[in-house]
Length: 318
Image (cartoon, rainbow, N blue to C red):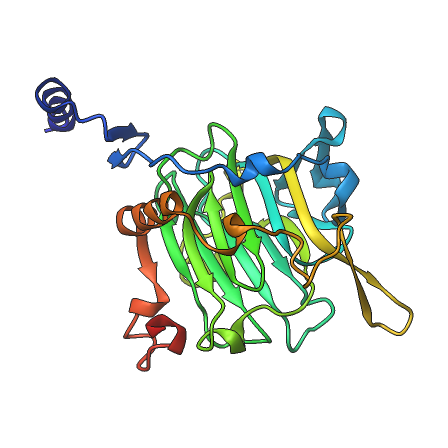
């Protein structure tokens, strides 16, 4: 029986030219990703060391390539994390990340934006959370969003990745403006949150910092610690680089108010530092990519979880 998938693939390739199928490390056959525009090509990478500060676990953060790349590490002593030097109100934020290899149950790598340090009871958040699999040597991608302190209602969506994230760097990107929030993986949109009347109450509306952290999420990510981090396999090393930050930076004044200072030296009619149709709405290619990711690789959406939410959140029906 173990040879059936290989025999199927060979027959498929010979008889039907099934180039849309690709083998993946342990999940069998998947569909080939569609071609999409590369938003990451619109911006220039910036050094990690020049734009991020250590927030915790300094001994477990190692800068590389003159600060262009960094390793962040989880071991028995601590996790580690970085935070942007500035806060931003809208923009494009991206990093190429390679995840720890091996048995990673309970390990969480988060690439996200938040302002919980300034607004502890009314914070906003846009999350990529990469979760070490509970039982197998795989990773799961989770996205989430909070707006104006809406933490009681989780808006998680989960995806299986179409590649092995431990073997090479892959790009995780967030586009955030007044029109929509788009989560992209290797430039393929996996989730779009459109800013409309139904979502306006929970739509992030305040300046946020960019974070990247690695930590022990055993209690939170593995059903109350059912599959905790096994430190026999430590250290867990994640690498990141190709950092792209194109946002409207906010400078704090002495009276705690914020002054917008957009990174581009042009006048803006709003606090959106990115202009043009390619940032306001998804193109046809991107819509194809979004549909592909959600139909082929998404396995959980809070909008479909009727056992968790007896009343469907309003943005699900918008």
